[in-house]
Figure 1 (spheres, rainbow, N blue to C red):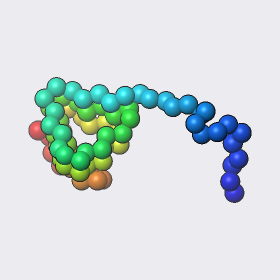
Figure 2: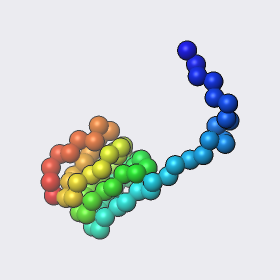
Figure 3: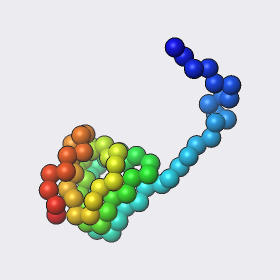
Figure 4: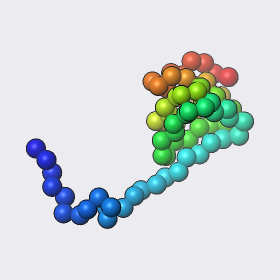
Length: 72
């Protein structure tokens, strides 16, 4: 079943929260960080990672499943 909206998509507006990246973070190439995510101080994000939730301070995160492999 489809829901029919009276307002066109372009007129519905956008909510933007922004991305926060702390000091001393390393972010690899081709990383995608979604809106509203906070990457805390000293974290490392591996290349190609999709980050959908907040990353605690000093974390090393890899993979598309956001595997937190260890603390830094």
